[in-house]
Image (cartoon, rainbow, N blue to C red; front, side, top):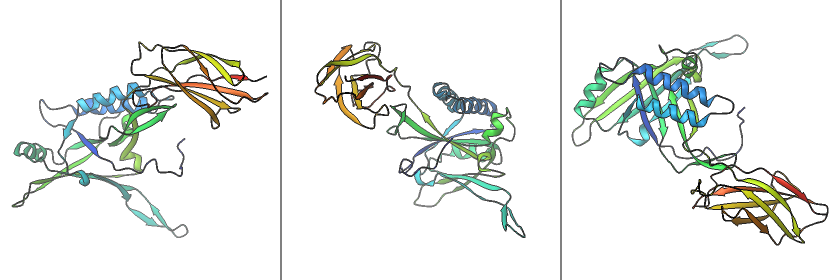
Length: 312
């Protein structure tokens, strides 16, 4: 279960790409049900235990293939908000909120006559909106592997999609425009819906856009001599050319590796290595683990298994 943690991990500027699926957009246009079914499959894999990231990414790509890529938007105009809706005043507990009001809006600056005419004809149609974080520089840890991750916001009733529904899972689309002399034409896209809970209006998830490489296997780790360890490992460097270096970490009496006493780097094809010098202490257990790094020294494999040895 997610926790509220102190930190700055979520503090960043967000830049989104906008995708929209419209119901009854017309003959020969993208099919609304196809997009909704892909989103249903996508969230099914995201909510699986463990999360099925690779399948979810495949479904995300399928959803994008069935939705309109709308743009160019004014970057700071893309807005998603959920506010309290109707409320009633109780005689003891006071104000009780009966529902929420969700809105999405964005300013389209690529307002060609064809685009304007198309969107004008969809005014009042049901739609589902998806915002895809654009930046490819955000890395998140998945069992140690630092993988490209993007935030995805789906504006639609995801719980209803997961229940197999395709009707009334979206929101009503509204389109307006403004053309001013000496300025570019601005088209405003609006979506609004009154819902019982926030989840009925939008869902936010992190998606990883790459898969981790298989971790190296640490076969043996033992005391070779005073202040020296030896280890052997298995890793198919030829099959995984993206991994340029194997990182070796040794921890002092700590299998959580919060007390690392030695870090060494070896070639992926060596298969064995020595770690020295390490000031060994008699009776202390030392733990070793491996990970694979790419050419930028970014970890792209999960951590290996841990092997331990005790100095006699």
